[in-house]
Amino acid sequence: MAAIHKEIEIERNKEFVWDAIRDVGAIHKRLVPGFVVDCQLEGDWRIVTFANGMVVRELIVDVDDETCRHSWSARGESFTHHNASIQVFPEDRDKCRVVWIADLMPNEVAEAVGEMIQHGLNTMKQTLENNSADSDQVIASVSRIQQTG
Image (cartoon, rainbow, N blue to C red):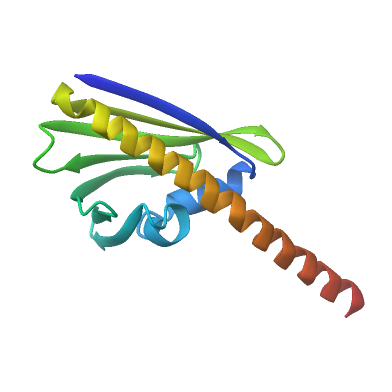
């Protein structure tokens, strides 16, 4: 069985990043737009459509707010086994580390899946850090309004 472990630092606080990750039905809008082009929830499952045309059915195993960890199991013709998790760890006030681990079979798909995971993490970083400026501007605007109002 192949094991993939990737991580990335994101210049946003843990709460902001976790809020986007835990919104499991909106990853195509909030977390990895462009990398994932559609995501549909069906009970405990989500159907994820990637930009490369691949469609995967994923069982949502857990969304744990205490540990900021989301786990799932992908089902598709490429996999005989797949389970993965993504977890957020604080680094400092405005920075966190996201760790994505996947175990899968057959081993032959590991390289391609590893590349997709890295692409997903890079997209996540870009999306969340770019949104941080917008969010900070909104917070600053609300603050100014409250102070003057």
